[in-house]
Amino acid sequence: MAKTTKLNYKNIGDVVFACSRRSKRIAISVGPYKPVRVSFPPMVSFGSAQQYFEKNMEWVLNKVTQAKKHEQQSDMLYAAQPPADTNRLAKGLYSRINELASDFGYTFNRVTIRSQKTRWGSCSTKNNINLNIHLSRLPQHLCDYVLLHELVHTKVKNHSKDFWKELDKSTNSKAKQLDKELGKYPIPRGKNLE
Image (cartoon, rainbow, N blue to C red):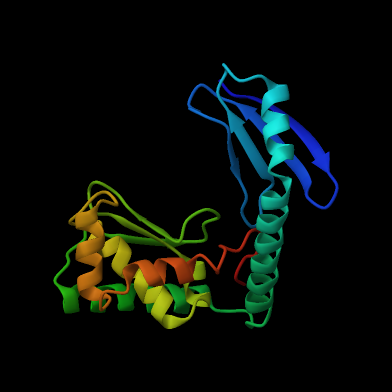
């Protein structure tokens, strides 16, 4: 079980230090809409983890600046969009995934569309696809990318080379490029479509 300690640093905010048996080394993670996290294995002392973090402060500050920029861009994008009819948006996503499945020869069991906080989409082992209603806020080519990503998971259940090779077939060999671009659009947190 992880033991956590939260400290506040100037220009960064809260930093969560988490000791976990799953950690193999000291790792710092920085992302939009979440505090900076430092994970470390039990064999490493809290003091050593804190020292490692402070030694890498310049890198952390750079990443925090990038994350805040993404948050601002995301907030501006979502704020600029008017309240939406969720039923209409869900029907649009359902129609589009059926169209892409037909175009590229994929089959799935069923689709569930709801507001999610952590994922744009997912595909179960039974080929049930879950989609985030907030996909409708993305540019169309990125929305299509997420739909295709989940459709490919109906054939390849992991993110191996075979997965990316299959995804490249339906994205004109731009899968990795689109994945990187998608990273610029954090999932809205606490922002519900009306």
